[in-house]
Image (cartoon, rainbow, N blue to C red; front, top):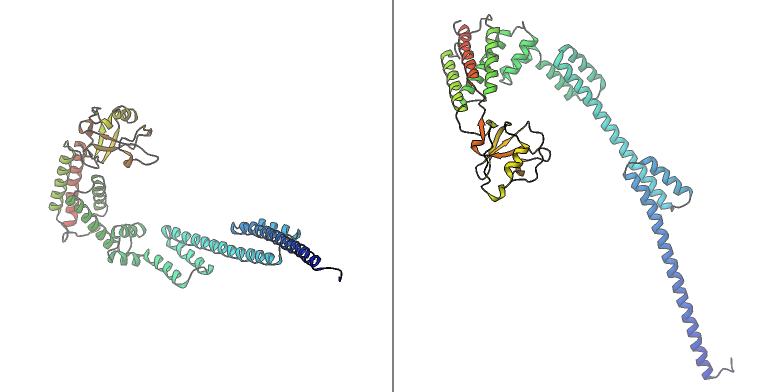
Length: 381
C-alpha cells in the first residue's frame, strides 16, 4: 500500500467509487424488481379473494365454497385471505338462510290467513274451526287473533246488525244478512234498511242523471226486492213519496232520451264511423285518410274520448286489432305501445249510437210504472 502514490490513490479512489456506485444501483434495481414482483403476487391474491366473494354476493354459496377449497388446497391464498373469505361466507350464508326462513314463515302465515278468509265467506262454523287452527299454529299474536274473532262476529246476526246500524255498507250487509239468515230475528229490519238504501240510491241517479246502464240495474233490483218482500208488513210511508219518485223517474228517462238522440257529440258517446269525408286541409294531414281507412274501416264502432287541437273528434275503437301506422299523425299521445286503435274524425264522418233507443225508453217507463205500483204496497200499510 505504501507503493501507491498520490496519483495512484486518486485513481484507486475514483475506481472504488465507480464500483460502489454500480453496487448501489444493483441493490436498488434488485429491491425494485422484488417490490414489483410482490405487488403482482398481492394483486393475484386479491383477485382470487374477489372471485370467491363475487359468488358469495350472488348467493351462490356452494360454488363459492368449492372455489375457496380449490384455492386453499393449491395454497393460493394468504392466511388473512382465508379468514376474510370464511367470515364472509359464514355471515352472508347465515343472513340468507334467515331471510329465506322468514319469507317461508310469512308465506305460511299468509296462506293460513287466506284460508280463514275463504272459510269466512262460506261458513261461520268452518271459519271458527279455522280460527282454532290459527291459535294452535302460534304464528299469530293475541291482537291478530282478536281481529279474526271480530271478523267472525261481524258475520253473525248481531254483528251484521251492528254494521248496518253504523251506516257502513248498508246494502251489502243487509243482503248478506238476508242470504245467510233468511228467517233471522232481524229480517224485517234488514229488509227495511235494504229497501230504503236502494230507493235513496235510485232517486239520486234520477236527480243527477246517473249512468243509464247502472240506473236500469238499480231499478230492476229495487222492483225485484219490493215484490220479494211484499208480505213482510214493512211500512216505508215516512220516507217515501211514490208519486215524487215516479215523476223523477219519468223526467230522467225523457231527458236522457232527448239528449242521447240529438246530433251533438259528447265525450263518452258511442259512435259509428259511418262515412269517409276527410279532406286533407293541412299539409301534415296529406295521406292520413287513406292510412286511417285501411286500419279503421267504415262501419267500425268506437267511443269518443276527446278532441284534438283543431277540434277534430278523437275516437277509440276497442274492436280494431290491426293497429300498425306508418305515421303518428299527432295521435301518438293517445296511443300505447301495444294499442294504437285511436284516430281522428270530422263530425260528418261519425254517427252517434244512442244508448237509449225507443224500445229501451219504453221499457224504462214501463218499469217506472211498476215501481209506483210496488211502492204502494209499502206505503199503505
